[in-house]
Length: 105
Ligand code: FES
Image 1 (cartoon, helix red, strand yellow):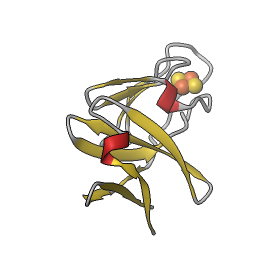
Image 2 (cartoon, rainbow, N blue to C red):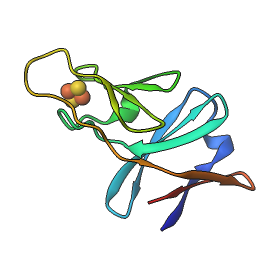
Image 3 (cartoon, rainbow, N blue to C red):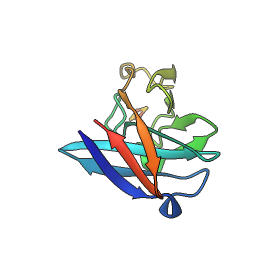
């Protein structure tokens, strides 16, 4: 199911937002004009990833600094503590049409 999340003008390059879509929290990021979407809650300790840092294609969790590739949702660096590990998140196709950013869940 495709859902429009925001306008391109709402999400400039280097920024990300979380959107609640059909009961799922989805993070949408603009990396150099390319839009990507993945689950927006960290698999380690359930932190809001949109409050973390976007470094190129990598989203860094604000709590224990796990890093995910926003293109794939895969963990590229686990948390720095021993409270368990982070797991890969789901990524979602994104399309941009007429200034609208749409995620396909
Ligand atoms: S809550 Fe994200 S790394 Fe722990």
